Image (cartoon, rainbow, N blue to C red; front, side, top):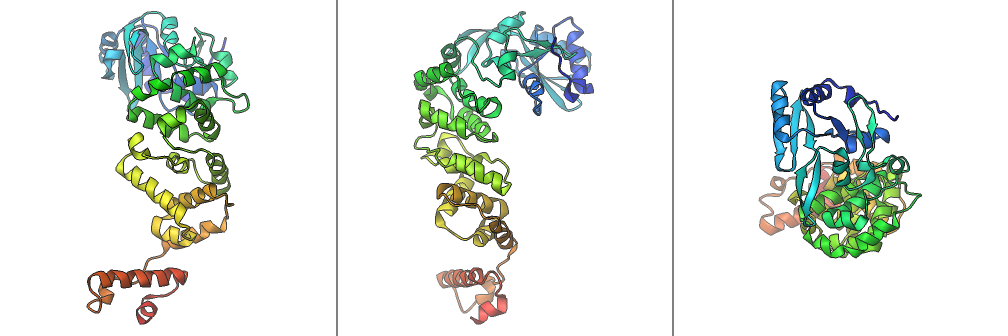
Length: 384
């Protein structure tokens, strides 16, 4: 019998939540990412609990134990229990009654196998009791241990229930799949056959998945396979992934952490900010990265104009797009530029210069200063 042990299971807050729900005689089963990641020895960020208790019963049981209950998704059976500041999403076993490709109408169930059958991938349908005993109603453990991302039942049926699962498939493969084993042919065929349904998805949901996908340690194989199925063009029209794998390699050489925005910039495409509902700040950063990569500005000036991290990202993007090697000396140049401060102010040139002439003179002196390697001081620049 397989069991899991982890600090999060033994944490007093989690024990209190489990005890509160179990006090009514209900089943208490951890499910999803917390179980999957523990079995894979990966970090756990969220704690999800499945139970046969109804939302109303969960709320009452929480109140009896002094635990705060928040009805975050009560129509779909989810109540978040907050204990010691730690959220635990507790959801009643469910079965799908009807789906439209974006959302499901559900009915509550008392059968864990029914609950498991409505999930997306076999590796996400593994449960564990509070004592750590693993419950595997659909036999997903072999897939998980082999890092095989496989839809539950028929791939096409699961995708038509929620078309976002097509994108989730690539995201999960990037995070948890075995890169040497390749992709499930049935899944890829089902995704390719249901591309029309992707148009139903909201840009917010697509954007959230793209962020998670591109944050994986190496999303390049998944993105390349997404392109081959035709899905990439549906999400990001005009995107080109040929420079993504080189970028991931360059990131490792430069010691740069994974950045979904840097990787999105290397994909290119039209209307990205709108297609993914980027924030104004994200869209502006994306534009600066792409402009700086194309401008061929030197590393020191990049550091001065963009700051250390954004300048590094722009240089990595340039190296990937134009097939240039990464040079560790560039890091020093970037840091030099980022720490430099232009010594001349507008008031230093007034009243001799006014209006557009003032701006032009400031730009000329700044260019001289940058060209000197930031060595010219205020007096030298004003005397020039």
